[in-house]
Image (cartoon, rainbow, N blue to C red):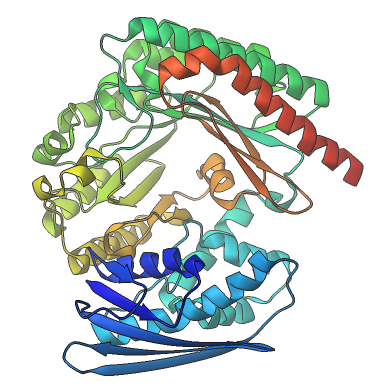
Length: 503
């Protein structure tokens, strides 16, 4: 789909125009001028005074014309960036409207293309805005539908029930620990994940660096009196390493980190069932870790083969029961909507198999074509469901979870996600992952340790986020972990000195 855009010369509009076009069309190209080869032309008129006023006229090759306009008061802004954001949102408003009217496709998330929509509602709650007014503002400003606003409200309510001090946790931090190894690489994956076979030397070197990071960060936390809210072992698959290596890693955590016994939650991703053994489960239990993930993704064997997961459906079920027998009492399982070759019948089957197990939480993902994944590079090999069928599968998940006593407690969205939908975490009440809430709502600093681990340092006074990422490949990490650790400590010093001065 080639779209000619007329009347918006500022290059800062290019990315939002492209992102919104991608919601409607699998392949789209924005042309910033009239072009005879276009499929559709959209002419904008933009005026900036006390109000920002935008109109858009869409004309297609058949001569059809669609018109939309929008006007909003310009709020005082502290920077040019904030001022332009108001203008950009007004342009997006009319752009989305004419494309919806032309394609007859309603975008339930409106103009939102970011991954954390619930942050918008949290901000309004913190500002003391009533639910009724907040919902109307979300609808007016972003064109979000009532259905998605209701989902946002359910999640915000649940999060504040589980973490009532969510808005006052800036004095604490959470820790993410990345283990960059898996049995194999899944076709849809872009996480730092390397097939572990033949890499034992690399694994040992990596773990040495990780232990160093944990010790240094732990020393700083103890010295500053900073508590840890949650710890999350992700990856990759953290249970890819040996039981002995896991044992030493958790011993390091208890030795280095402050007051581990009072950390609210420690989670270990055991997502690949083929990495779970009795010996590893006993190590988890030894260190009082009982929240894990065992991720089937699908209960159709042909699908698992197609996406590069080498475990079997039977193995997923057997390892789930083994984990239960060893005292794992807070198990999450993931399902992915829209995997290659899967439609409604396959997803209904996955829900029926989930019903036999009833994990404490179920995270329902919608397949996203991530830019660097094997699946995206070879799209012609992977046939996926159409938008309408994907939406029906999400609807089935919503009904199933409600009927079985699960509640939604966090969500996030991704670029190039099928049907412009979302990923939703559901759980039995009071079995929520606090880490998932913290990472999505960005209310506190999260320190990333290990290969590919991303840190988010949050300034309490402004909410400004500083991103910092460790190297993704083990060799680069092994060569430079001391430098990266020092860099993180310097950022922590700066942020927590500001907190002290504010106090």
